[in-house]
Image 1 (cartoon, rainbow, N blue to C red):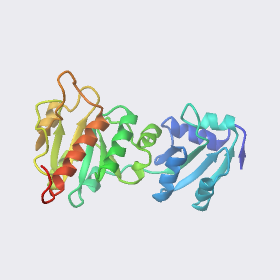
Image 2 (cartoon, helix red, strand yellow):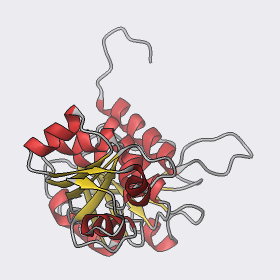
Image 3 (cartoon, rainbow, N blue to C red):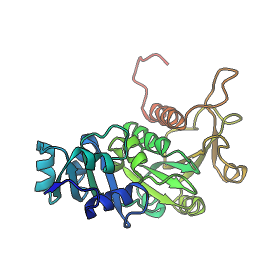
Image 4 (spheres, helix red, strand yellow):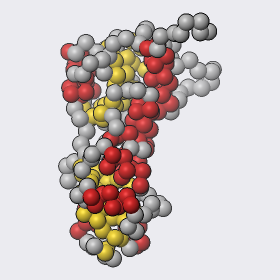
Amino acid sequence: MRLTSRQHEIVKRARAIRAGRGAHGEVLLDGDHLLTAALAAGVPVRAVLATSHTSLVGRAASAGAQIYEAAAAVMDAVSPVRTPSGIVAIAEWTPARAESMLSGASPLLIGLVDVQDPGNVGSVIRSADALGATGVLALGSTADPAGWKALRGAMGSTFRIAVGRDTTDTALHSARAHGIRIVATMPSGGAPAMSDGRGGRLILLGGEGPGLGAGIVAKADERISIPMRAGVESLNIAVVAALVLQDLRRAQTPAKAGAMP
């Protein structure tokens, strides 16, 4: 179907999702990379708006998506980015709950507490995927992992690992119930590394600026801080997540005979 009007219902629907007013479970995917990741993960793609019919558009059509050939002016109205990529899709995806993510065997989860920047949420999800975490939980007032900015920042990782949303209290209670160790990250005053790499963990990272509240830190089984040079107060939250997960991977990897310590 050829789209030339911004008043078409599918255009209004895409713009509503972009603004956070879409139907429950609807997400907006911008660009080839996200659509490719969604299709590879079996995420239901309902509609694709594209300026040209590519092989990727053909794959989406074969998977059941309704295809719309959009004029440039329509794509400008639909795309959430300043320079449209030429392809936008509407898909169905909803975050999981903390209970389901913490009930597995030795889960390794990143818990984001009151992280406001959706780009940071997406970057953490991407780091978690790259470094072996089993999932990421958006807790408290953390930005919605289903928002287009978070999805774009995650570069498809949202569809490859478990990503959930819940309250902080629910996540902590569930972690305790399943014998999962709770780890709080702190700017200073914590141990330089986790005690060992065994067992399940919920690693908590606080929001930009304030970090984790004292009440949450008090409930943790471990408290860790990344050693930094004097004068540097903090790191980007995605960097913190990556460093903590990489340190844990080292702890889980047995040293090879004859290797340097």
